[in-house]
Amino acid sequence: MSRILFTITFVFTYLSVQAQELVLIKESQISISTIDQKQIRIQLIFDMPEGYEHSQGAFGRINQGKVDTKLVMKSKKELSITKLDAVMTPSNKGVGFRIDVDQEIINALLSGDFDYQFENQYDLYVIQRKVGSPTDTTRFKLSKEQIINETKNKLTLSEDDKTELVESLNGHITRTENTLDFGIIPSEKSDTDNTEFYASFSYQKGYIFPYKNPFFFSAKGIISTNSSDSLNYLSIYPVSYRIAEYDKSGQPKNYDLVAQLGIEGNQTFTNYRIAGNLYWQSLIPNLIDLTMGENRLRLKPVVKIGAKLYKEYDNNRLVETDNEDSNQVFGEIYYYIPIKKLYSLILDANAFYDFSESLNPNGEIKYNISATLGIDIPKTGFKTIFKYLEGENGITYQKDQLLMIGLMADLFSQK
Image (cartoon, rainbow, N blue to C red):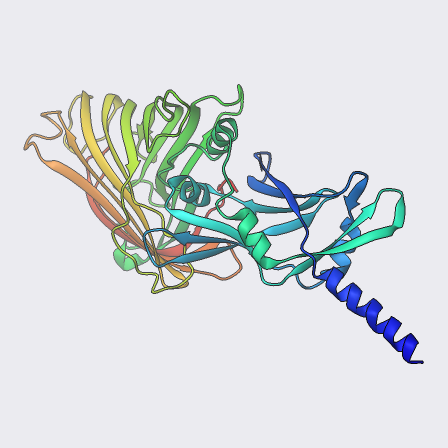
């Protein structure tokens, strides 16, 4: 009887030791997807004997409830940590991790300002089996430390992949996400003394054919049920061209140089012009931290400096004047500031100088500013917002202010 007990004890002890043996990682492979969902993927390839494969079905069974994977991004300059949901999937060669990326995430990854790694809350187990022999199996441990070590700062892309991913997300530096906000202008704040409905949008998308081209479409505007509101405008640029996004070695620069040709006007186009822009835009260091230690991704402000040439074809100015052929110089800053867990402040400011003596007889620098306080609505793509605009419309040259309460959504965003 003692002999039998000894044998059983030995077998269980052997299996326990065997289960703790760490799986060997042969290599990691990086890939991307730009069709439909934009993703970066890393595959950990196991070092297995010839003729063996990883059992995908067994992975799901023995690790049920233990797969909880995050991409953890740690700022190199600030005491901030961001955790993003990731997906782990088994294959017959190993296990893979993938993360859906948008413009914010890819900008952060390309900035070099973050260390990053995939993490799983629990140790996992894998079974390697001989092909054609389901009973010839070996069980190994994939520890949470291995996952960290094998993925830490490993999301390095080839220049072709980097170019493809960046261009599928509408460029290396995107000034704003594709967004739509809409809401109500209270009657006491409207020009008509009636409640008005209002919408503001920004949209940018690269042209698909031919692929990997530097052309993209851009549109931005403010419209409302009061079509004569002096702050309403539409800017549509069907031809936008990135001149200098990459250097001679193919490395992405930390700035964009963009040329545009399009049409600008008020909401009803009773005032419109053909315009061409040439502008430079780049990132600058973060100016303020209001996260209070919460898990929020902080992006750098984007500044833009440029020149505009335009030719008016119609105008409805209060003082009758001829259509103008003139030019402007302008500067802009866009800054998305996350606040604590659910709040955000979006600052968008523009200043311009028009060289037309009739439109700018006093030689003044004009400006317009927008401040939006947003509150995230959990588990939706919306924010409740309070938006304030003030300044001079650079198309109609009328000055006004606006207070709006409503919702913001990234309905057009490329994910």
